[in-house]
Image (tube, rainbow, N blue to C red; front, side, top):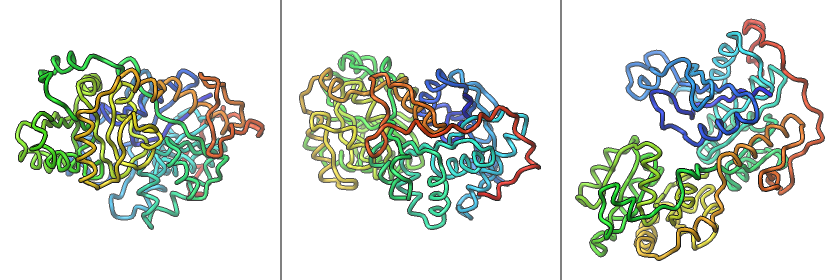
Length: 431
């Protein structure tokens, strides 16, 4: 089977740390089938004049990432001008890319509901093959609230053969947009268990040049207001004077980095901003911390929470997205409401001193590896073709939103073994 994966959330040579969850899952998925990745890059006239867009536009047209053949086609994008046109423009751009002598896929997967999933559905209908849309979080929680985008987003989701959500809460959001429950699968992200595993906290701190006596709270993620980066600093400021032995470390970068640095200046050396770090360094900081803090305003299922639990570290996070699905026991951490700084600060103070056994956290969380996650994802793709899913590694099939196995009795569509016709012979009017 040949699968075409279309997504704008994927690494490239200019941004190798972007969306490691897709990189890991797609690489594991390639063990089951042939995969082509269109890791798209937005483009518009004059994009090179803006630093936000010019850096990504320097990415190569083709590269190999974790053994995957990856193309970086540019798609015509109108930022903040006419968002309802971005889906059709994206689909038209991918149509031209496919017409360049690409073998036609048997399934098209769009990773992110809009415009990626919308474009995947358009192309799949033109080819007569199934479309699977994977949703992550803000594509459902945020974009669905935008009147200019919602009709196209709903159209794509409702016409997709199957929709894969990374959490139960997100699957409920997809169902609320009109997708039948029996076409929605919940497939949790995995974790690299060779990298994120229980390690000696003292040794990790020594390797990082940190004092073994001080307590460490850790934030990992984009430095954005919506991710709660500024909330983490503000909540820490509330407890810093009363708990002089606690430090806050923030790993990552983002649009609000300067605002975070300005807020951190008031606390001197008590707050360390490391900038973006390689994944192995992130794992070392997780091993060194007493607890992870992630006060996001909205989320899918953030991989850093899974990675923290797989490392045997408790978590303080907000009650949003798929986080409650992961923090299913008080032993694993505390949940607070987004934006509630008093509750967040108190939870952070408790987490810094709470005794716990890392091995108990790992056993209770039961985090799956990327091979298991990819196998469940592949089951959904097989179900989209009407084929019987493989048994999951733990002998349980991926479940639909209604708790039933995916259907396996529908007739499979004919294989798309032909080459894709020239773009001039087709259009995207169905979009």
